[in-house]
Image (cartoon, rainbow over all chains, first blue to last red; front, top):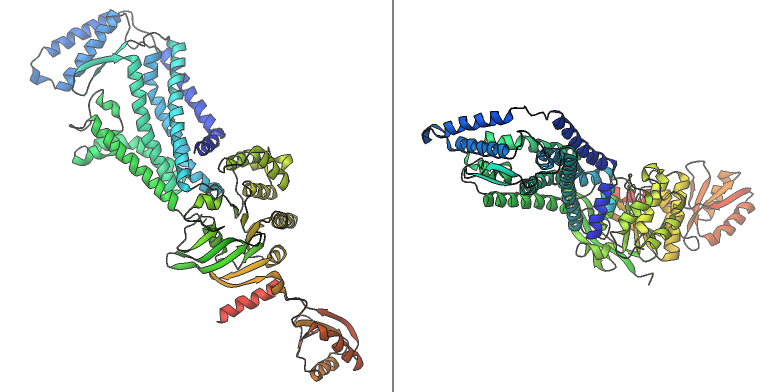
Length: 313
Length: 310
């Protein structure tokens, strides 16, 4: 099995496009750092501004409870906490360090997911398109092991992509903005509308882990379409569309009771750490269970179709 | 050992939708023989081969590789089989050697020494580290053969192996196959719609039409056995009328050949000398006598023609 995974990984690694995509990710990270760096010029009286913001906020919070929804109250409280911390530690608003930059780089990882989708969409369909599937399936290896080795290599590629974004943004961010601040608190409003905080380091780990989970779901969709329809372009197109439309779909359908069972209501587990779920009553355990079911069903479809298929073209 | 059954096919049937592509096909291939599947396009040759190597599912019947049922233990069965199905597509972005390494990793017990040996055997040594993208079709065919031979199979299965090869390439390929069968006791199963090619390559041929087995013949049988059976003998003479009356006197049936009007007579090879003597005695000048070997094509058309009329 390890040698099959090695085979599939080599076939991915020896293609030029893989390296172009990896290089693009690093380039995007660097460009983002350059742009952010160019716009970093805090005003001289930023402390005054923050202080007056805070006193305005206190005034709003002192009003009777009925006038302000709980969500808004929590947001304001969080802002006050951030401002107070920034003033005390002499950090102008919008300041950067490697860790803040790395959290921002999660949106680069979204582009990375699109790239991995291209690889996942091609890994089965490409073998059919080139005809190499015939040689691959006439070896003394059954089809279950072949599809499994392909899927595992796609998961490896996904992990490598996230690691690349993480490591390159820490390094690039460190070069541009300095490495201090890993213990700096991230103030956030949790799902119960309570203001809490965690260190930048743990926020990064959590953010990347959850982004990896949602990335794996997208890539699994691409892989399934690749295995079922043997068309890489269809697989890539559909998974990119679901990636971008999925989340807005959740909002459009939010009036329906089954909205919470849609994959994209559950892909972003970060919603249980900050802000709260799109549908009241959802819990992280619920989302993990829904994700697990989608994961199993998508892979069962890929496996079933691939193992049963007549290779006759 | 080499005469034991290497591959056995029993009542193999493939139905797609409502169409029966392969219909109750049974045959056995012995060790060390080159066995051909011959039939017009669409007869079911490729479907049969793809069922043998597990590329498509079997509707009914079974395939045994050295007694192992392919559907029951695919990995054990395929470890004895090497296959090229249609054009041998390899990974174009890898070198020939990387391709072979890739397939070697899919079989236990194929080391680099074995890869080198196979590369040597198919004569690709000088170009093996080039990208497959740069290979000619003939080189790709040789790389495909190397891939099929990697695990030292006892059965080699080739579907339309000479499609797209030039005459020199076909000849080279044929020589490879004959050597492998003769020297290594490998059974080779080849499908083709090209009669002349099968005639040169195979020991036995199964003729398939409309998914059914029409007949299995050894090549010697098909061409007519030279020593015993009556044969068509062609006489080239100056006076055909006179010659025909001589044949009539000897109770021999004479036909005029369709292409040039020469006289064809079916007779025992031992009687040829007597007939010539009789002709000469009657004053016919005989300028040529030769046996007309039935080509595979003629036998083939005869056989498949019979099926059509039945």
